[in-house]
Image (cartoon, rainbow, N blue to C red; front, side, top):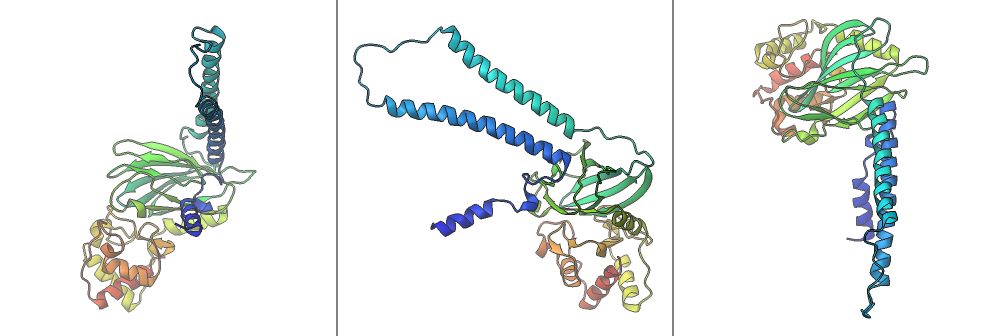
Length: 341
């Protein structure tokens, strides 16, 4: 491999900035990075000292011949034994203290919703292979709607903190919720409830990834967190909490009839219609999402059509089958779903 190939390989191994734990934008992320740098500095210093002494001894004494005299023995030396016991103990003690402080900062118990606290509560359910977000409370007010794959949250300000508490559950196997710039990873384990919190002062899109192997499409179980201004977030809340818009247009009406006549409604919900399935993503406002297939492809008409026609082609192993719709039925269903904004 030439130098260009080595450089390319190294570049591929370095995550983009949006996925780097060394560019945190949250209090929890900054605490974790500070701890990581301290641990790396201490262990790196130990490695450097031990390696230097080892290499010195290897080269300094490699050709020395035995002259019949043993070197001075240090066995039983109290100063040396105290030194090599006290130094590691001191290092471990410092690391325990700093790690405990970081855990105290990162692991905050989930409080009860209080009116006026601007706190968002969301239950996250990991599924093979997508994320379900159940919006529970914001600012002490009950929300009670569900979305999929794209989490929205308000940005914090110097004068007003806006924390997001996530209650993490799994519907099938072990998953792990990880948005590197916002927080450390937290597992979603069947039969167990975990929690974590997010907070940032920088609006934008933050990417993440399921960090626990959960099956054949684990690598495509992506995370997208949209951090918005309070006004934008509240507009989004009002839109998502509403039922599906009913459009009286011939193609859309026929598409709705085809959709509601198929077994799609056994898995998917569209609020305001007879579709009340909970096994698959809620489609009430599917076109408000930027992506399909858990962040794998952009959400547009062409990709939506391809996804419905043959989900296994885009995401092999996913639990949604192809229904064998005719081109006409497919276009009508896509037109109906496009009206769900």
